[in-house]
Image (tube, rainbow, N blue to C red; front, top):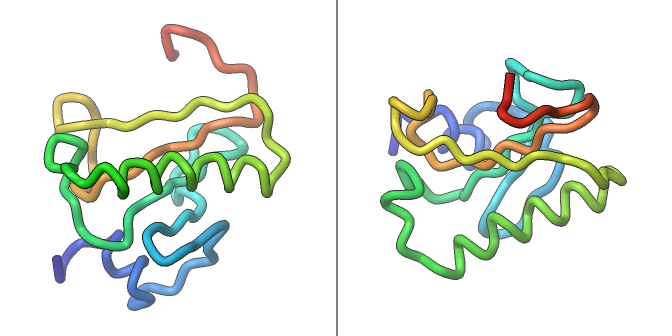
Length: 110
């Protein structure tokens, strides 16, 4: 999708320091972090949200990316979040997993 900011990051149109990358996914720091560690894991191909994600292999790659990022950074305690749809807080309509860590996290969030 040509106007999607995450597609532009994934294909190198917008320079970004990637925390992790493989042929299917990319991970980078959130520009508006909610914790000291706030990394986004995205697929390199455009998928609007979890509702549209039908590819089981890509689902696995996204979770694999979370594991690889946390292992690489030595993070043991973290929260993983997927906001699906505007009403759930999704702001960029390209599926992305949030990795949030670096401070105590309560449940429910707040």
